[in-house]
Image (tube, rainbow over all chains, first blue to last red; front, side, top):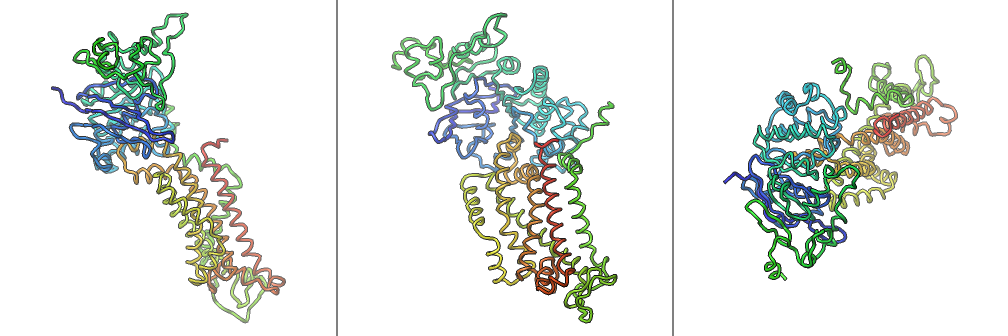
Length: 331
Length: 290
């Protein structure tokens, strides 16, 4: 039995709006083993980022709320901790890298100050002790001339450099879990490859588990050990990375794989999934993907399927993988 | 490597002040301000007369080599009183603005950052304070507590924080949605640290601009209240009560040296502070890049 860094059970995160409440994350379960990478894929608006914010305890208040579930981090339920206890975990044992490196650094402070701030907060270090450590961290993430960079402001760095600074900041306290919310989306392809390579190296060095959120299947193939496909706040398919690409089961996963640009032959139109992610106020009665699904059956429109284990490491939420008997029992 | 040497780390502040240096009006204002501040601070070195020394034999002297700006009805040297008056007027401006900025920034950031009920309560208090007519309240308070320089500072500060609270709140509202604030929370900082270390340094520009203009307003209200006899008490000189002392018909007609110099000083001080304030606003606004 491997050590679990993070176990999430039946997480439900909702939002109150003027039009009523809805659940952005609707009963999500997953586990991340120590030193492994779990990738979450899905279209925009299917609850990927809210899942990560829920783990960090940063769901926007007062409209967002976690209505049920457990978030066990090294056996400790994060939802039961006070705000102060959470502050000790954030940035220290769980760190997060954001999507937009251009705006995730404070524009009025030098890089060195911003790294030192984390060390001061979590490691009780003095300002004077922080500088060599900051330089060391920047060197580790492969920034050129780190001694200069600590004295520079964010506007003097390029996007890729800033993302490296963000990674250095996230790693400054050797976190057990790193949440990367689309860390490469805002970067160009060459820098993207470098950043992914860097994260892999660091994972190997520190045995950090990574929760990797992206909508880029290529990045998943590169990084993830296990993959979660999310749609409309629910897990649609859960398996290891190879199985996902070799034998995808869920029609949504298939559709996502088919719409990858590398699948398109010259002169052909790109394949896309018709329709849009349903609005949370207008969820279909049956499977959330049914209106867009090419293989939808009658039962799909009537009843929501449950997540079904096909093999020991492959779960899928689709009526196709239920026998006719099971389908009949449910109707 | 030659590139490395030429790249100098400039903070956003340094960039702003570089830009300010190119604004001629603002620099004129800044220079005038520096001169007045210097001569007020070093007043004892610039004049040989005592501020309140009465010399009734030499009352209403015209400007001369001995008394550069003449003497008043009690034979006190006007130039000396003008210098010392600058101390009072400037300190009233500074202290009242500091009070206003302190209250305004604390309440503005708290309301803007936390939102919800806290924000609602604070903004309603702002609305209530904005309903008070300034001079009426000032006169009532001065009448109850008695006229003194401290009361002028406090009144002016307590009635002047609403504007800055609104500006600060609006800035915080847009700033707290920025990713680096979320990143700061993800790094485990508590809200007090985030407000003090991350939000306030980012809204220093509007605060500085507002504070500069607030100093001008403080000086004006001191002059106004002292003119009404509700501000600084004689014999302590301030520009306002020097003007008040010269308001008789006789003085206005015959003793120009008693009211033109303090009047001009108030005028030029306000003008130069406003020039500087406008210049700062342009220089520190990142969207205005000429």
